[in-house]
Structures are given as C-alpha cells and as structure tokens.
Image 1 (cartoon, one colour):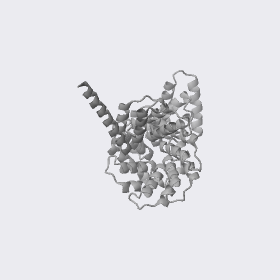
Image 2: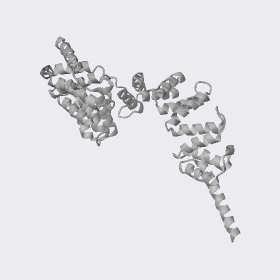
Image 3: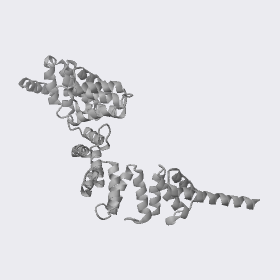
Image 4: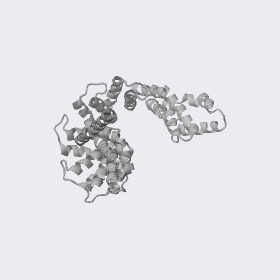
Length: 386
C-alpha cells in the first residue's frame, strides 16, 4: 500500500501542473506499469468522493485499465457506474459489456444484474430465457435476490410454466438470507395453503420477520390478521400499529383500511378526522372505494361539514370506474337534487343503469321506475301531438 500512496501523491502533483490530465495519466509510465490489482485499489481510493469530478475521472481511468486486464471486481464496479442513471456516465451498452465480462468470470452479482436487465423490459424487450439463465448461474453461489427473482418467475409464469411448488422452494431458500420479499411470499404460501398445508402460526412467523425488515405488504397483512383475529386473538392496538407502519411506506390498501378502522371506531370510539385523513391519502393514490367512502362522509356530514358538491366529485371518480354504490348514490342526488345539486333525470337514469349492470339490485328497481316514467311521458307527449 506504500507504493499506492506514493503513486497517488505523484500523479496528484502531475494533475496540478497540467491542463490535460487524461494525457498525463495515460502516458504516465507508472500508470501503464501498474498491475490490475493496483489499478483497482487506486480506483477505490479515487472513487470515495463521487462529487469530486477530477478524482472520479481518475477512478474511472483506473477501473477501466483494471477491467480490461481481467479484474473481476473492477469490471463489476465499472458496470455499476455505467448502469446508474444518477451518474452522468450512464451508458447501458457499456454497463452490459462490463457486467458480461464479470459474469463470465463467475461474478454472481453481475450475473444477477444481467438477469434483471433481461427480464425488466426497461432497456430491451424482455428475454426471460436469458434472464433465467443468468439467475440460475447466480444462485450457484446462493445469491439471495436471484433466488427470490427465480421464485417470482415460476410464481407468475414469466418465460416458464407456472410452478408454485418450485417458486416456494426458491422463496424458502431466499428467505434463509432474510430477503423481505421472500419472507413475505413464504408467509402468503402458508397463510393461503397454496402447495403446502395451511399453517397460520407459521405464516405469522414469516409475516413478522418480513415486517421487522420493513416489508409494507407483510405489515398490512399482520394488521388485517390482528384486526380480524385470524389464528391469533383480536388485538386492535397491534392491528393499528402494523397498518400505520405500512401506510407510512405508501401502502394504499393500508391507508384505506385505516380509514375504515377509524370511521367504525375499532379502538372504541369513532375518529372521523383520522378516517378522512387516511381515506384522502388512499384516494390520492386512486383507491376507488376510498373515493366512495369520502363521498358518503360528505353526503351525510359524518365528521365533516355536509357538502354535496364535494360528495359528487368523489362519487363521480368512483362511478367512472364502475363502482356500483357510487353510481347509485350519485343517481339519487341527480334525481332528487339533494343539497341544491341541479336535477338531471336522464343522468340519474344512466347512473342507475350502470349501478344495476354492476350488481346493485336497488339500482335496478330505480332504473326500471325512471325509464318507465320517461317512456310514459314520451308516450303522452306523442299522443298530444296527434
């Protein structure tokens, strides 16, 4: 390492005294005489502060020299630099070139990254056969994420025939390395009794392990489990804790469930302020039933000032997505002009029809009544003309 420090000091002084730093570096005899390992160590030293562009440039030069002379870790690190969209050197073709070089030397991280590149469809059309081949190479060294991604391929049938038993094997192997996603998928398998006998205590163990590692879906499921007492005593405080943690990570379903949780007073008393807060969070993410529930709150004035215009806006969003209850409530407002909303019988009839087609039986009766009234009026009008 003494040589490395001496060399760094020497080229630092060369850079200070010259405008053309690249030329100095690539013509410097010491630079050309370094071993790949020495180039790699220098690159690590220069790469410590990516914000210092002059240092970063030197790191790239040394990584490149080491990579071209077969240094596996230099090839991988260089590939990561070119792969990062946040780096100004982003170049997917160069990234793949160096990932391939490292992968050919058995670098399991490079093999995994190639698996991701060929399956994501972000850069090229998905090639699941290539992706699976690289994942399979990577798991020879038990790469946890490659094991998990292979499990997903078999679970969803990406480039392979769906095989949930095989998927579960990969998830269990990945879970041994505390992969949150794999722990969650194992929990789902045991909770739902897919390809293994249903085992709720075991499922909860996996959910809890995933939740502790911050998996929002596992936190959501634990919230639901403790809320309904599935395989455990009902515990609303625990349910709230897990759902709040999940919602804080952006889980839309947890936001919605918390809205229901507080609206219905599962902790002993209704908290409409919190209910509205979580419904609005979910609605902002496009949750249809959250829009419907907000519409109901503003229609009834439950915990909020009654406001039919706001209610209509929420109902209309959900109705446009064929939510039968929203269509029905909106139809009532337009039929009777609730809250000063202008009566529109044709719109009401259309909304009753949509609600009916989506399974609302009360709407079917109202649709028949309104359409019959309209037809009778039309008939009488025609008779008068005659």
